[in-house]
Image 1 (cartoon, each protein chain N blue to C red):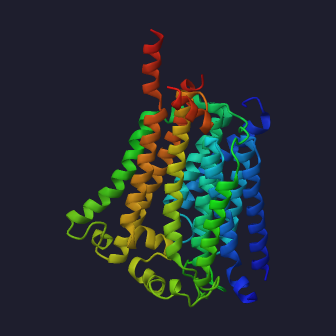
Image 2 (image 1 turned 90 degrees about the vertical axis):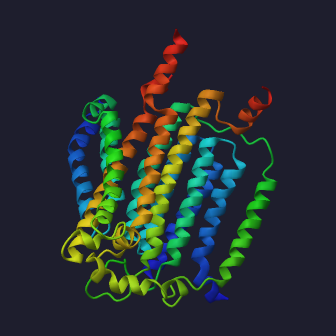
Image 3 (image 1 turned 45 degrees about the horizontal axis):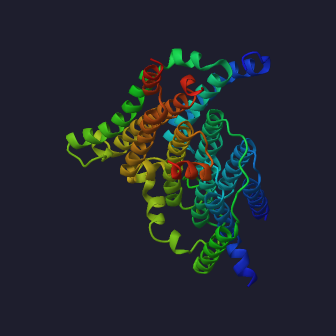
Length: 185
Length: 140
Length: 119
């Protein structure tokens, strides 16, 4: 009962924040609202029993993403969004049609929290029963991430390494210094 | 910001606490929520907080950009190196059972080493991205 | 009818959040707001996946004494990877915004389009 109440409250906060992000024009306020959105969704992850995911979302979404957006705002110095020049009718129509199609699709999904849905019946019992005897690790998420599906995690580390290289190439230090020196000469 | 007494005091005392918490999360990923990614992000956030209050030059003395590039590559190398070592010892790629005489101990060693690699890479890359965004030459 | 609503309200509100993020991406012209909308869309998709893995009366998937029902760990692993990939994409997108500002002098989409057309 308390679970459902916290769930509904957090979802209401999330909806209000999302609508405020659409409406507000000052970019600094938008970034702060985005950080609040991340933190509330981390709270929602905890209510849905996903502790690792909540940890990562709080650290990454409300931490790193907000800092990077604030740094971009400081570099671009544009503090207010322009009023949109064209009407919102066509995007609103597209969004409504997509939303209606998705809601129509959810009629076949089993109820929220059903312990006998197909997602819980096929692969999950194997991992829950055998993770301690195969790997000796009590946290099944770490066991799956690092041992059963360690190859995917190698790909993920490569992705974040590539992002670091990409940002360094785009706005890193040394290239700009050389080019500025040649412009000044 | 370095003239604000409250910020200076709190940052000086929070920095080791945050770094210790990052190490705790890194090595207790087996028994509770946590693991490499979360620990890497938390450690980099500690350095970013210090840089925001005291200036970029203070952390550039401790962690110059060249060292961060070496650390980022070293993390990926540790991860794939573990896979190659298991290949050389006769098993499949990333098959941790081979790493020790008892398979469970091999799994423990393998998981700890790769989480270490992940943590090092993630913290180094987050700091590299922060350095790139706050580079003084971009502010003109 | 009532039990359909009770069983699915979570999914419907998450779809509403997804559509709010989608609307921000396609309607607003400012590039930083587009990236914020994209992140909202991504986070709502993560909420949808974690809702699929939730079990009533279950607990976090860490094996401990006294618990028999656990949440499904497989969506958690997938979403962990997806969050990290999402932050990589956001960092690269914001770096591109900085370069666009340096090249065009503005980050409003219509002004960039006009500058391109007038070349």
